[in-house]
Every structure is written in structure tokens, then in C-alpha cells.
Image 1 (tube, rainbow, N blue to C red):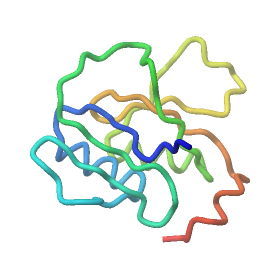
Image 2 (cartoon, helix red, strand yellow):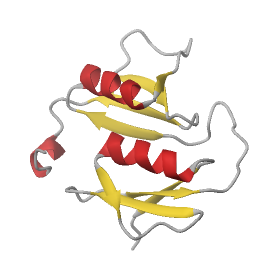
Image 3 (cartoon, rainbow, N blue to C red):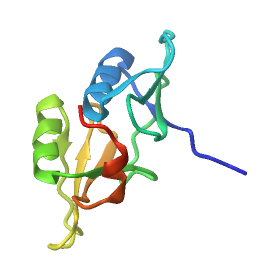
Length: 128
């Protein structure tokens, strides 16, 4: 049996990236941070952790992997994430009727905000 428990993102500024992802996902530190490693876990939900690894890695575009993050209110979340320092990414190949918005965190790690207002998982997550 296998389970995805943590997704590792390589970062340059561990503290700044930890603050971004904690605010973006309402995650908290699972354990005290090391000088080059921190694991963030969901505050309420049963979802994978995000581990930030302060280890230089060449940026490759398009990235070989990215996060799909579901949003109950996509437009509001895109605005909120932009206020936290994320940026929208333009892609000529994005269909006009796409249900996702491509974004990148302050260091350029890409993720998509997927419009899922009626996702059944919302019922399992307590409101803040």
C-alpha cells in the first residue's frame, strides 16, 4: 500500500516561502524548521503536507510537475494569492473554457487554481 503524504518543493528563501505557503493554504508547521527544511501540514484537512527544501534547483519551464489546488471561489482565491505575492502565468495554449488559472509562487514554482465550487471535499473542511 502507498500514500502520498508530502510534496516537496525546492526553494531559495525558506522562511519567505514557508510564510507564503502557510498563508496560501492555511497550513501550519508540523515540526520546528531546520536551517534547510520545513514541513507544513494542513490545519484542518486530511491532505498531503508541503515540505520546503532549501536546496538550489534549476528552474525548468514548463515544469515537469505542478500542484492543482481546488478553489471553492476561484476568482477570490486568485486575488488573495496575488496579494500574498503569487503571480498569474499567461499560457497561449490555455483553452478559453479552462477551469484553471495558472499561477506561480514568489519564487516561480507553478500551481493551478482549479474552479471546483461543488467539490464534495468542501464538506469535510471546517470553516476558518
